[in-house]
Image 1 (tube, helix red, strand yellow):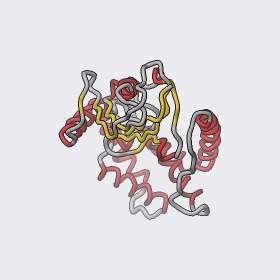
Image 2 (cartoon, helix red, strand yellow; image 1 turned 180 degrees about the horizontal axis):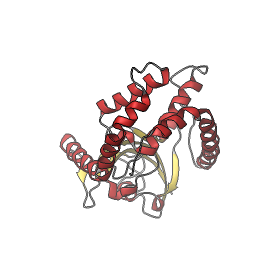
Image 3 (cartoon, one colour; image 1 turned 90 degrees about the vertical axis):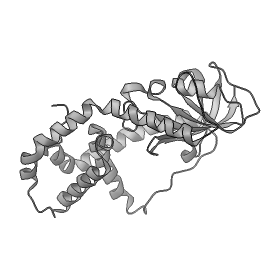
Image 4 (spheres, one colour; image 1 turned 120 degrees about the vertical axis):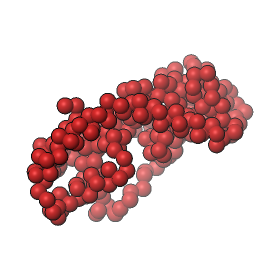
Length: 258
C-alpha cells in the first residue's frame, strides 16, 4: 500500500504537534540561516514578508501551517485531490479538531479507509503523467495568448517582456537576477521579488530551462520562461513545493552578467 492516511497518522499529528513543530522550526531555522547567509553575499536589497495576522495570532497560524506541511508534504494532497475533495478533507479536519463531527472518526476510517487507499494509490500511479499533461496544455494556452512567445526546439517557451541592451550571458557566466517562480496553477514556489533580494549564481549550475532562457536575454531585459519538466526538475520534482513532472513559469529580470 503506497499511501495510507490512517488513524495512526492523524492521531500522531494531533498528539505530537507541539513537539513536531518545535523540531521543524529548529531545523528550518538552521537551514534558513545558512541560506540567508549565502544569499546575503550576493544579494541586492532586503525586507521581510508581511504576515497575514498579528504577532499574537501568528503562533497558532504557524501551527496550522506546520500540520498542513506534514500531511500535504507526505502525500502530495494538493496534487492528488480536486478542489472539492480538498474542501471535504479540510471540513473533516476542522470537525475532528473541534470535536463537532457527527460520526466517530474510527468508524469512518474503518469503513472507508481501504477505499481511500485505493483512490490515492491509483492517482499516485498516474500523477506524473497527469501533471505533465496539465503542463502541456498550459504551454499551448500560453502560446495562444501571447503572440510574442516562442517555443524553442527543446520545448521551452520564451516571451520577452522588456528588451535588454547590455551583455548577453554564456553558460560560464555568473548572473544577477530577480525572479518570480510559479506552478501552472499560479502557486508561488520561489520568488526573489517577494523576498526583496536579487540573486547571483553561476548560470551553468541551474536547471536547463534557465540555462537556455537566460542565454537568450541581455542585461536590463525581462522575460517570461515557461519550462517543461524535462528541462526543470523532471519526474522527481523538488521538495514539497514542486510536484513530480511539473511545468514551471518564471518571470526573470537580468541585472548583470559577469
